[in-house]
Image (cartoon, rainbow, N blue to C red):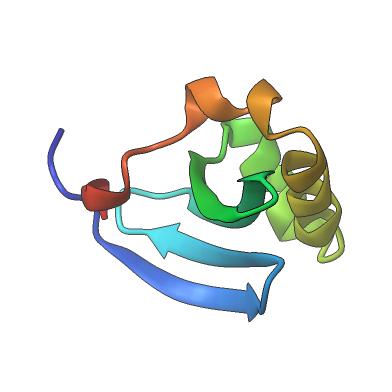
Length: 85
């Protein structure tokens, strides 16, 4: 997969980082702990519907990041490789 160019547009330490990508849309990076002694992060390319929510409701990103952090296994299939952007 080709590298995605992205610009960081919002960040809440230990909660999420939101990137706007050149092709349109967003990538959300969410830190989580799959085990008590391991820190990891999920990079999720947001769907069209999720992008609309980002644009219409500023609190949605924080709430969605919390869902991802609490149930990361539900989102692993959507995770982008860290070297993609």
